[in-house]
Image (cartoon, one colour):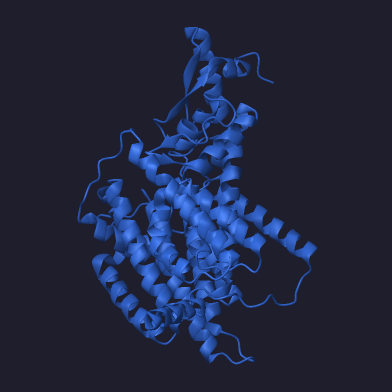
Length: 462
């Protein structure tokens, strides 16, 4: 028994000093008020850039997919807060429901801009969490900033996942992975981190893919800070269990196809390295020869880098890489989008890109931790970590080339105000109590009570 306890204590100490280590003490710099001002400016910029990705007009004048048909509609057809714990696709979607409820508090004509700004705010918050949570494993500010930027402006997601309430849980999931690796300096910070993970768990069962990491964090737990984070994780993960077990909604029939393995190489591995645009063009021009070369390069680089980067990088690779693969394969199988995601020869597109977001960013995380740890071993105090700066610059190029995802034919067309006016006209013509109002993409709509549409009837609009 004593030998067993000694062995467990050794494992705990190893995890605490490698994977779950305390971040370095903050360096002297700008004061608190200036830090708050910088954060506010960067936060606003992050929201603005997400809206610009889909096109300014589309972000402020159109509603996208489930944002209107599910989340705003749910708020419109219930009392204040009444839709927050309604399920969608068989599970709780708390944060998207909150966004829909807040949008419903504003004038109806402002719903698109409200949802875009609120969704962008959640994604910007996720990027900030990643910046904070990576301090223990990534010392280079350049690499941490690059990963935070990739979280906010993820280069593999495409049009569907930008400035949309429906898909903010994917960004929160990646940030929650890093929260499980983070040891905040204060109990207050740990409490906020725990609430963030809890909100993620209330919004998607995807938190289950991080159970192996959470078990390691539980084994290595030291104090109240760990307990607060782990409490948020386990509560968020467990609450979805009875919801899915007793939910009677019709779910998508899972579909297994060998396309899923191709999807992983094209959308995750290729996307992690080059992003959607550069990676897609490489596929168009070089096809499987490019992917095979990329696989070989990735394996060689992983073996070389991790073997020389220390225990923390090795452990992260052992956790993050299998999580990336399992999360992608299971999600794509469960949602039956394998054929939809596969690129034929000479073609690339962003369909169902949301499923690649977290898996691709997990692979990027392994690369950045490995480079940071490797750079620390060879960096003198007088010489800069040139490799870290070079990789950060390359990531910014990838982010920039995949920045523009707008498509006015899919997310555009009839503006929200015009659709509201058409709805008001239909109410008057049909003497109905509610009517359908068009949203984006084509074919999507939501029903709105006619009393809410009355102000948009011809001759009554201000």
